Length: 128
Image 1 (tube, rainbow, N blue to C red):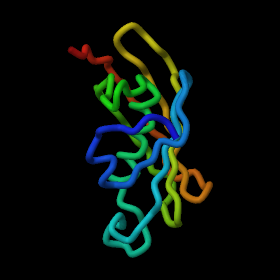
Image 2 (image 1 turned 180 degrees about the vertical axis):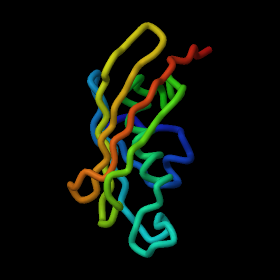
Image 3 (image 1 turned 90 degrees about the vertical axis):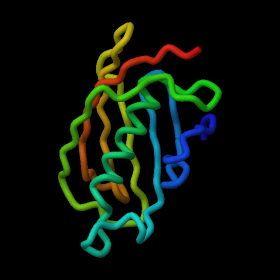
């Protein structure tokens, strides 16, 4: 696991950064009933989207001292299958890295099955 984030929302959901390097980031979330939509056993799409966004944001610019170094400019997600299972994971990849903007892709799986694909644009922040 990499450095802890100070992002309280991610902590509240239980998102864990599994691996992070200059090419992208992998995050994981243990599924629990509080994350279901109104169809019992199906993870809410907002949770899936959030997981993809976290993976892409961490992959675009790793946190420094627990503080994010980029913000989401835009994102899009395509849901392929309902997320049902025990573990939701998102793996992000850098598609293009510019001076200010970074274009990312994330693939979200549930127990190894591809359930969503997301893309996003992230802007570096100026801290301090």
